[in-house]
Length: 316
Length: 316
Image 1: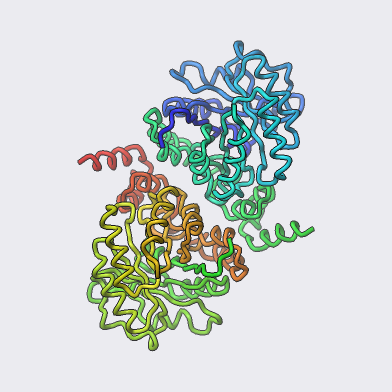
Image 2 (image 1 turned 135 degrees about the horizontal axis):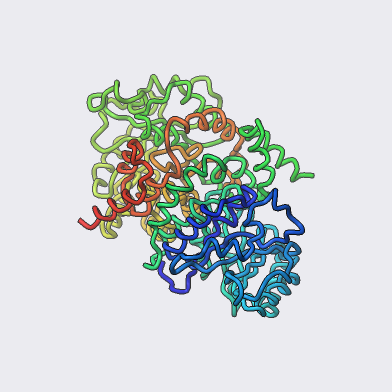
């Protein structure tokens, strides 16, 4: 698949940060940024821009806040560096603290929201657009949105927002490719002036396959993470995606190197990827938080009990 | 997806045996057979029926040979037991040693072959059919078969063979879902009187997605393995497939139990699943034997060097 319009965004530190409270040291993040840049990826999302008034700097690492001066330390001196993205959640950012794009190392701001919060997301996106940023709307938990709400959100995003991209976010890793095809057709039919993006989770080992399905149906913004690092089962693996994309601008070698050097050792300390309780939440279209909590207890391999507990809670 | 005609075949011990010279002890195999039967799977493939004159019983375990008396020890006393399958390779079986189905614990014999060996496969299939077995032809390494050879093989399989099923075998785990769709349409258009089966490998984390793609396009015989155990990256995970198939005859609980009891500990001893060198062979459509060998050396994490060596050898 070669399509020049395709952009790959690395989300390793941002989505992976959900597994370690964003406590990556600067050296690690710099290594990832170098690998992302050398391999030809278009963007790197470094973390969340959260209010320091809402979250404690003792509990969370730098990439929960993404202060401009910390980002400069990551990117300085890297040649042909990837563009920098940060994510914001509705109601967790101090908008007045965000400088105009010209005065900031950040190129893109992505607004994560549920479909029901589309009005708030549009207001934020339009503000960030007005001060010079590329912007996106990332519609989370899309497997649980009612048809009419989704259509309304997409129509609003198309008509009222300045977003460059609207993302399908499979937060729970529960989509099969049939649903991806269905959603892509709906997104493309409504979002006539926007690009569509894919942010898939790998709870059922379908993040890569679903990203391919998105590409086939016209998605041009693709989220991926190195060695799949991300919340719970993680995301579409960058190294797999590179095997599918035929654009010669992408080079898998720097990604292979940093997996060996950084991510194989890290995986010994942080558990992401294919783990049965994460798989069970994906299969049942549930948030992985219960599975992440289970894995920190001595019942971590009690799969049947965990499965039964989720099935029962669904019946309440 | 509920389709009554769908049959699931467990290949854990047969394909997994390629990683340990088929040296599973009887107790382990019996536990797997119980779980397979309790969970409602239709078949369990226990191993290969190879000639004892060609392979050493000291080097290989029981399931390289699948003597009837060993199979009886696995299945005896298990209620509503799954049907038993064995696989044969062209030129490695003593056909005269295979008793008629009525006198054997085996229900199905699957003949693995390359497309070029279709004549030999058909001869074997027709013999085994004549002595009462269900039979299949499993066309290996399908990603490397030329169009005209594949079509000829399929036409022969349809016209000349008594096989019940013809399988698409993605030996190297290199297929994307576009190719699965393409192959399924070709198989279904030629094999008017046969079922089509799917045996996918997971080198690019696409075994499950590709199996779904096969189902969508009419495949009714689905190979899966518990916790994905199989050669190199392994196969379509049974526990994932059960999440997709809605037939209430399947119960995931016995599969979850045996993963916790047997396969989590086994994975500490035998390396299968998502491992970067296995991924690289899948991406490059190569046999995983070089990757399996690499993982036994102290260069096991030298991904770039391994990648370069495969790329170069492809240019020779």
